[in-house]
Structures are given as C-alpha cells and as structure tokens.
Image 1 (cartoon, rainbow, N blue to C red):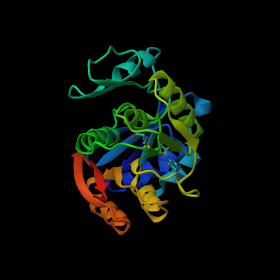
Image 2 (cartoon, protein in one colour; image 1 turned 135 degrees about the horizontal axis):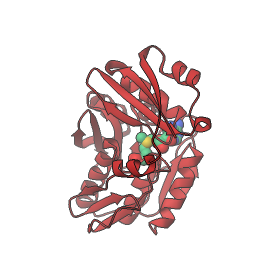
Image 3 (tube, rainbow, N blue to C red; image 1 turned 135 degrees about the vertical axis):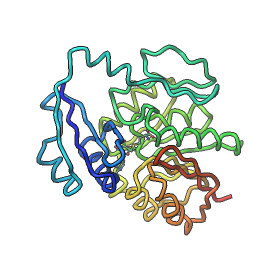
Image 4 (cartoon, rainbow, N blue to C red; image 1 turned 90 degrees about the vertical axis):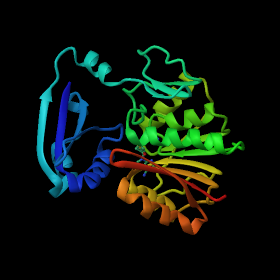
Length: 271
Ligand SMILES: C[S@@+](CC[C@H](N)C(=O)[O-])C[C@H]1O[C@@H](n2cnc3c(N)ncnc32)[C@H](O)[C@@H]1O
C-alpha cells in the first residue's frame, strides 16, 4: 500500500482539493500545517492516480509530492484513524469494527468505500444542520442528497423520517457504496448515478448538498424546482456569503450557519 501526498500552498488549497477530488472521488486525507496543506490518497500502485495527471490537476499550487510505502500493519493503524463521530446522544456514525455508541440513531459506514465517514468536518456540519432541521420542522417528505459519497447524509435523513430519499453521485464507486450502506443500515434509498455538471438533479423539498463551492454554484445555476430547504456544505468560511447569495434568487434565505475550523455549512430555507 502506497501513500501519495501532495503539499499545496494554503491559499491554493481549495482549488487543489476540488481538482483532486475529481481524480480521487473516494476522498483524500487532509493534513493542515498552517502555511501548507497536504492531501494524501492511498492505494496499491495500479490504483493511484497518475503523477502527471495529479501535477496537471494541481498546477502551480503544488509545493511537493511524496510517496511512502506503508508498513504491513497499515490496515490496523488505518482503523485507529477512523473513530466514531458522535453528536450528543442523538446520532453516531461508526465504522463496522467500533462498538455501538448508544445514540438514538446510529449509522454504520465502512470508510474503505467512498467519501463520507462522518469524520470530515463538512459531513459533520451537514449532520448537525440536518438534526437542527429535524427539530425545527415537523414536516419531512422527500429529500435528495446531491453528491452522496458513501450515502451517509441520505441514510441519516431516511433514519430521521424523510421519505422517499434519492441519493445521486457521478462516481460509480459512490453509487455502489451508497447502495451497500443503505442495505447495511436497513433503509430504503433511491440511488442514482448522475452528474450535476451535465444533468439536472432530481427535485425535492429538502436537499442535502455537501459539495465544494464551484459545484454548489453550478447547482444553484441549474436548480430544477427550488427546494424549500437546502443544506449546503463543503464551503470555506469566507465562501458562505457567496453561496447564500447564489441561492437567494430562488427564494431561499439563510436560517442557520455552522462552522468548524476553516469549514462552514448553511441551512437555507424558503419559509
Ligand atoms: C464532499 S463529498 C460529500 C459526500 C457525502 N455526501 C458526505 O457528506 O460525506 C462530494 C461528493 O460529490 C460527488 N460529486 C463530485 N462532483 C460531482 C458531480 N459533478 N455530480 C455529482 N456528484 C459529484 C463526489 O463523488 C463526492 O462523493
């Protein structure tokens, strides 16, 4: 197993991450060191993105590329890295090898598959806002998870009572992981493969969109029917206002904003 790490200048990190996720849609590890940010992908030599593709994608932002062979007990150490996400006594997301956390709702997600173990701040912020939405609006109804990754948000929504829940991703691995995770967590999802850059996404009154800024702007520009409530995540703190403004013409106003480190997420609503 190889760890391939790219260090990029902090000011270019957002663009670099957006490009990297295109080449490694199942997710990248992020190490924030202040002046620079390191993004790492794991895989056997044949599975990793090609170095020239990576260099081209990250362009002038690149500071350094390193590769390291991981020790034999890597898979056990990797398990240590993935700890459960616990939101009070209400919701937990845990890998299959961790014990139950005793929360009202528990999701079991295998981090080997696709982006969205709950450990990333952007996913966590979405789940916090989803719980807030569940508390503040008794009505549920249909929901769509745009860019579903592992399906973590769609599964949480289904467990909180939204129905039917559609989960869309352009990456086949994410689609497969979401189907498998829905079965493991005993919920029914309508999982579809679709690219929001070239297709109009399914409409629903509640939309969960943990995407990066450029994709959220494209989504705002090609909104099917405006949702009544939208949770938008994957934003750096300074991007919050721009994304709120992009959805304002659709009648959505900011109801809540949560932040964690450099990331923020918005709850936008029509009422
Ligand atoms: C930041 S991850 C979010 C995953 C999960 N929803 C979560 O909250 O953890 C973004 C997801 O969007 C998907 N994605 C990226 N570009 C897309 C596109 N053009 N159309 C549809 N999905 C896309 C990626 O494959 C990835 O699974």
